[in-house]
Image (cartoon, rainbow, N blue to C red; front, side, top):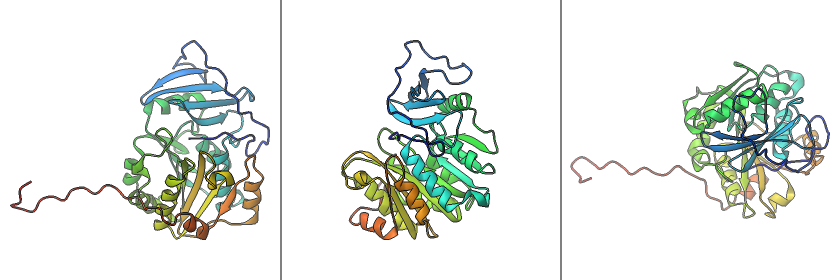
Length: 310
């Protein structure tokens, strides 16, 4: 679930919110580069739309839900506000001047907008994008000229299974941005899954989730409670209307075993966006989560003892 913004991260040029009409003609899956139209994928269909206000811009909808925006000419341009919030947090945690060789894992691919951004901001980064839909992953590689392996690999698979298979302490950054409709699949939101993510993170690593929610904020509070139950340090980034339960939208929650950035420059960046955002520190996150349940995997029935009837 994504909400579009009005300006990009680095270029500062305005981007409108209108959506171009779909072409009546079926799109060719073998066309070189992006071609507007409807494409059938393993999990349903996707719609590729030209951005009417940006000749280099493309929008991707998956099963009717807005998923991604790509600017072919400027990978640092992030049209979706929540992605700009993640980028600001990442840049504050790992200043580009330090030239870090980030190891990033993206759970949920879409058009690989965040992976393109990380590659442009940190050219030495090594990234893996986990995408459930193999056909979509192939289209995205063809359309958007993504960096090649080992700089960026797309691994087709289910996000939890892939995360559980990874070697401990091999990632600096994990971004969970997986949706089935309006919400993240429960298997990617439990304490047991967060523990797997924590195991994969190197010391000082950061786990970031895009928590989409309705005005009751039940899902976001449970996400916050679950992440805070695993990590000593947490932050939330969201716009005030979302935090007050006034609309549907995105809340960014991050966890780490080291303190997360709270520097004034980050706050100024967040407040200066098209949708000014608040940065909540750990005590505010935990207050937000009071009363919310820590999610757990379903309990499997115990095997009957020898001699007991099954």
